[in-house]
Length: 345
Image 1: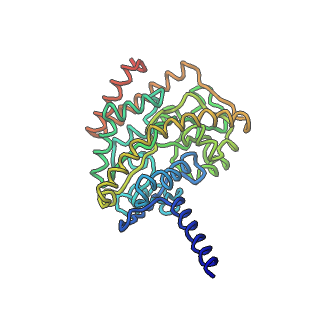
Image 2: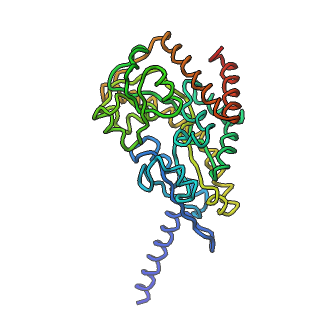
Image 3: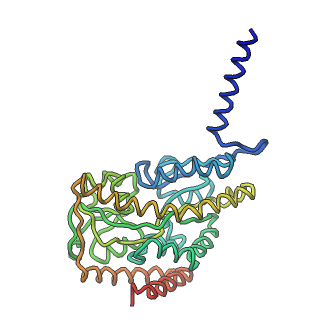
């Protein structure tokens, strides 16, 4: 009888030990805070799983299991176009989205969200945001609307198309899913842009509602399977920007214990560098995969037409600058930086 009792105690010890290894240790007596986070990315998007894994693994460890954030795919809780209002009002505690969705309420968001043909490399974008002060400007603008703001990554944006674009004239009458200042640039070049949520994008391309779309660049096109129905990858990149962002309801953030506020703020600030590097590496692999496995062809506009695109892009910068004082200051900073880099005269 004593041996049997000892056996059960031993088994129980191993179960408890394994459980304590599998689950992060939570400090005794401390509350577990659970948040819902709505994404504008469908579950199949290149960006959804990396953030979900980060929240459910890394952030749980960093907070000792005290903050648990559940990431929901596009439209699971609220429609993508309603994310701004839902997060601002506290219906959801946090969200991912593009500032292009709410640039009418916060104009400076348009400078960050696909302001076309600015940076040539992700590092240039990171420097502009975090070394030259643009990220702080974005944070200051969003906090007035009860939102904490974090750039999620700096990454390229490129068109995936059902037909080749080999000259500027090919944009005339071209139906394209687009957003923000990129949409304005494409419209100036003759295209007909429309904003379509990510969850509707594949069907819109498949059925001819649009001729082309941008959802990130190669990685987005591959993971969303857009390359199944659109066989041309258009160059040059339309943007290299901090289009994807994380926003957090101000009241929810400030309700966290002070140490969790500091941990979360540092975690999201640090992650942008790692995530940017990961994404750009994945981009190269994604384009190679689309070419090899889906017969996608790269269609590149000639240098003369690329210069015309840049002229149109700069018009959009000036339009964005005219919206308010913050936008004007940000665009002036942007132009000064690009001149120093030699990208514009």
